[in-house]
Amino acid sequence: MLLSKGFEIEVYTGTPQGEIVGLSDRIVADLDGFIIEPDSRNVEYTTAPFTSYDRLLCALVLPRRQLRAYLQGLGDYTLIPGSTLSLGGTDTFYRSDPNNPYHTYIEQTYGTNVVTASVHINIGISDPELLMRACRLVRVEAPLYLALSAASPFLNGAPTGYHSTRWGLFPKTPQHVPLFASHAHHIEWVNEQLVKKTMQNVRHLWSSVRPNGDRRPYNLNRLELRICDLIIDPIALLAVTSLIEARLWQLIADPNLDPLVMSSLSASDLVELADANEMAVAKSSLDATLQHWQDGRSITAHDWIEELYAEVHPFAKQRGFSCFLSPVKKLLREGNTAQQWLRSFEQSGDARSILMQAITQVEHQEVELDRYICQSVA
Image 1 (cartoon, one colour):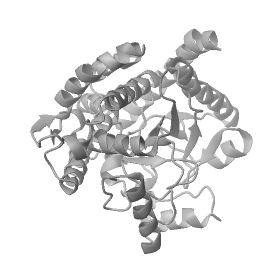
Image 2 (cartoon, rainbow, N blue to C red; image 1 turned 90 degrees about the vertical axis):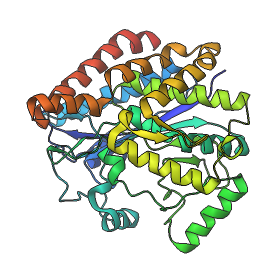
Image 3 (cartoon, rainbow, N blue to C red; image 1 turned 60 degrees about the vertical axis):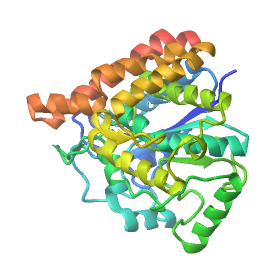
Image 4 (tube, rainbow, N blue to C red; image 1 turned 30 degrees about the horizontal axis):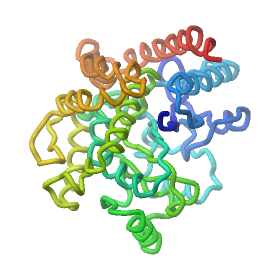
């Protein structure tokens, strides 16, 4: 048996020329399964939790096929890869729901820094103390998943100096989030933030990873990794997800694989280390030099992921999903989306042409996956 997994996918809509156009209010009115974001230029869909990777693949692809068909009916519109407003549009916030007071707060507080596209990876863990232990481990290793997913090197048509401009700009909220020592600690801390108004509501915990559930912070049933840029390639997304799942199976087998147990650093030092590693990866992704949470030693994100892959591969193989893990090797070999786009930019100096090519590639891949995999799964 595998852990259940589900995704929240935020994606931009716009033209084949890469211009991002706000259509979410129309999409949500006409299509089931899609949700508005505060800005109308991106739209979200959520997959049901599945244990099977085959079913997850199709749960990722089929809503996008439906959405593409709908967009074609509206005009010459498509889905746009990337996690920032790559070609422009940062000067205006396009409200999807002008009457929503929480959206007003977000616009007034953060502006277009939050008009990003990402993927949230949810993995089911019902035992609250195991969930807290998992969150501690994934928190200190979250930079590695960002390194694999970085896909936002451009803003307003030019490189920004970040591989993940999204995470470099994103307002982590509250600014200081501890490693939760227990479920009780998490409950106490969340309630304290609500009183202090550092969180507007229980959803307003915008950190790299958080425990989630039906009645936060009390009833929790899943780990939510929020750090990743939009991984538009479903195969790559499943690879990153399988790396996390294999790591969690390793943790389940060895409860001492816990930063509060295994590290030579204090809990507060671990938080500082994790936050610093996140920013280093936002800048340089796989090339970033990080500090390892176990002992503080220096290691590149690329080499750390290589080590992690070797460590968890037996757990994936034992449970029969190592074939979904193996594309991590390709990501390490060829680079993430941001690195590939920046290499192309060195040649062309044209962010628009890079985005237009990516738009075409993504649509072609979805057609192929639908035809050769999803129709047989269905």
